[in-house]
Length: 319
Image 1 (cartoon, rainbow, N blue to C red):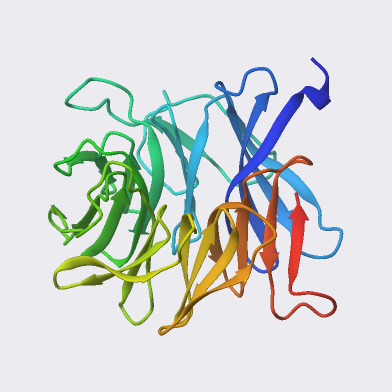
Image 2: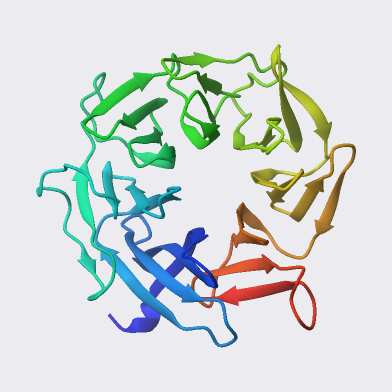
C-alpha cells in the first residue's frame, strides 16, 4: 500500500517546552479506519518548524496528558498506557518504537474491567502529579495510578466518559454521555446533579477549571454549564451550536464546536470564528489549538496566537 493510502489525523496537543509541541495522532489505512495505530509527533513552533516522530505504536492512542513534572502520559482505546515518568511497571506492556536519543518510555496494560473483564477503552487522562493520574473510560469507570498500583472506581453509571479536569488532588471532574458529571474529593467519586441534561442524547463534551476555581462544562446541545452547589446548571445557551470541547484560558472559557470557536468572558457567550469545524480545543501556554474535524493534508490544528508578529492571529498548522 502506498503512502498516499494512509490517513493521519491529530487528536491532542501538549507543550513540549519552550517553542515546541507534542501532537498525538492516529494513523490508519484509508480502507480500514476501524484499526488505527498511534503516533506521537514533536513539532518546533518556529516558521517552517521541524516535525519528527518521537513514538510509534500499533495500538490506537486516544488520550494525552503532560504532568507538572514534564512527563508525558498516553492512553489507548485498547487499555494500553505509556509514560516517560519513572514508574515501577513491568516490561510486558504493548510494543512501541521510540526515537533514538529521545525520552525513555515504558508501557503497560491497565487491569481489565472488574465488571465485564473487558479491556478498558481510555478516553481521557489527567493528574496532579506523576503519582496521581486518572484515566477515564467508555465504561463509566475511572482508573487511578497512585505511584505504586492501579485502582478502579465505578461512578455509578455505565455512560461513556469524555473528559477530565482538575487542579488539585481533591478536586477532579469527569464528564460524559447522558449528562454525566462526577466529582473526586480525594477519596471517592460522587455523581453530580445535572438538571435538564439527563436526556440520552445529551453529551457533556468537556470540562474546565479556571484559576478562580470556577468550573464550566460544554454540551453537544450548545449549552455552557457552570458548577454550583446544586451541581451543574445551564449558564448560557448558543442556539444551533454543538459544542465539542472546552478549555480554561486565563479568566475566559474557550469552546470548540462544529461551527467554529466560541468564548465566554464571564458575562456573554459569543462566537469568535465560524469557518472551521473542530472536535476539541486545548490551551497550550498563550496559544489555543482547535483540533479540526477534517484534516485532509495530514495532522493539523487551527491555531490562535494573539502575539503573532504579522498577519492574522488565526492560522492553520499542518504538522
